[in-house]
Image (cartoon, rainbow, N blue to C red; front, side):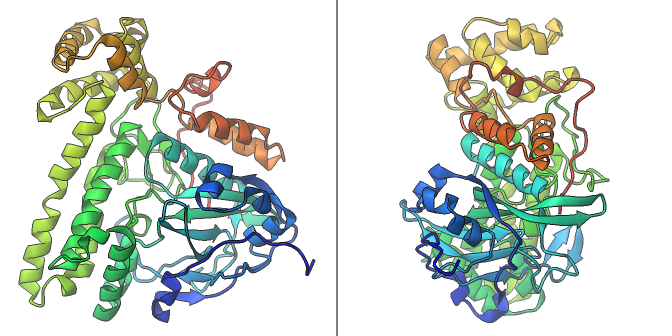
Length: 494
């Protein structure tokens, strides 16, 4: 196999050029018999990669970690973090190896990471491997999020390792996910150096993140505050988009919040069906810390941890630094409120949602919560109502005493925009999917994959790639779970 042709990645590895205390350089651990299960052709093309090369035997060897890719500089990143509010002074990539970075056709730099690539210096007695189930899950849901227009890490490929991975529940087939991200730098990355009072490293990290993600902040008088402001706004918009699709991340630890504003780490996440603002799916979230309606507040709390790490760069004087950072942090509630008003208002078909539309949004959500109405299908039914057919909406919201006056107020508000019914219906369709990764179907797809049947995985991935367009014959993917098949708990899968 020495003459095996490997895929060509045009690596340019900026993170590896930072000082060595930012990471540990190490190669992935080889696996027994890798085979490619899926390659994301469209993403490969965007990155300037050859999908056929990725699908080859050489691709399987490279994307499993068996063979080093030319130009790669593999490393595991170090970071810290608050996990469910508890401080962990050192975490890091426990089962992931960053191969390097490529600059895509759009000129944007992206990380290429192997998740499930074996133990690292930060594995904390773990095996560094990933069961195939979580690999399939992250592939499906991250790509679904991308199709929904939510900033997210992406899945480039999934590999079956030919080895078993052992957990408390027994042995499972192993997998490796090739994950693509704007970067894997987290709030916890800053916390790691902040806790060590390593001001030099913090300064390097601020410059690196601004150059990579927020170049408009490079000339700012106070780059630390400029970065905090940029991350704050990105996270406000991200969380608003999550909530607009009924998405619950499930494990919003500070090591799972990216500086880039992308969704990362699809462990116990889920999309709601029956609307409940207090909904929790994660089996490890016993106290409901990361419930649906807690997400904005947790985002704000996480950002305060970022601000705390940045204090030495904000101002030399302690009290002055705190005052300046707090003033920046205090912007978050308004930033989120504006982002959420825009997201929710557009799901009502409003052309330019504003503060005056909050009651219209809140009244609808109150009705949905009272009825436990399906989150996705209720908003989709607004499309039909805008076009003149209220029947689908009335199937979800049966209390006419509250629905009828709401419809009157909604229609009155729509007339102010001056668009006809067809235009409003189309506007709602474009932001209200009919297909989401429903939990029970995801579980069925994973179960089939564990029995070496990957046809359901590929079919579901194809359906979710076009979530806003009704697809004949795919009605099952839009239907809520049957009463005896609902998934009430999701698991981290590590």
